[in-house]
Length: 281
Ligand SMILES: [Zn+2]
Image (cartoon, rainbow, N blue to C red; front, side, top):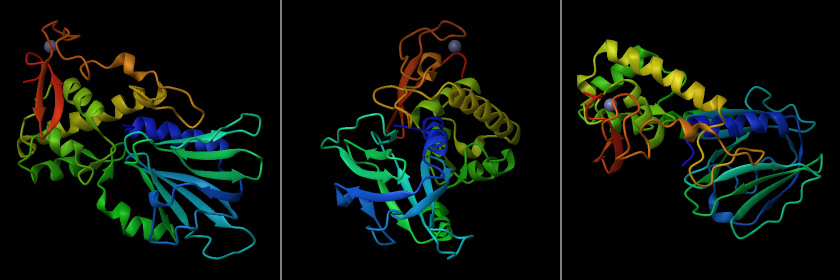
């Protein structure tokens, strides 16, 4: 499942290719993946994409109606969640693209290129909003701070309020937006912290360490194009490279990179969790 670094790479790709372009028409091949509150037929047809926003693992395409100065400070937008297997790819005019059964939406751009949303397992989807404010006040108001922006004080305050294991708290998008199973396991390893440690036991100093390590981990993963486990590709179809630098995720039973003891595998809050019993205590 794409997490913050992968979604950020999709956003960077869209900023390079789609921003500034006008959407000539939209083919909706599967209607039930498009949700309100705005009209599902909306999808920014006839609008220029002015910027791409991101909160956690969700993407927003911000539009601007052509020749209309309606709410220039509060433009319409589409929120896109890639779910488990979703992708958002740009195909320039010169690159052929053949839709298949999993191709749900195609935005035809005025430069002849296409932006394609494809999602075989359909855990992702699109939400249309009349304004960015509406997105922020509804769907995005349920999310915590973005993992790249949260302060140590804010994270500490949120952890103090939960008796769940730290792993479960960090996966909860209402606490912190952007992390999933890969980056939580990697983060806790880097912080030498046990995944089953209770959130309310985490000290202020440890929260500072969590935030510092999280920025460094996510920054590195973004620079390497994110992690590709099965099918993640960015907006231009490139796979990531950070999976080669995972220290614990997916490495159960293999030696710990630091102490060489076999990495342990347990289930925390229903999620497979790999950690080092020796280094994380
Ligand atoms: Zn170790």
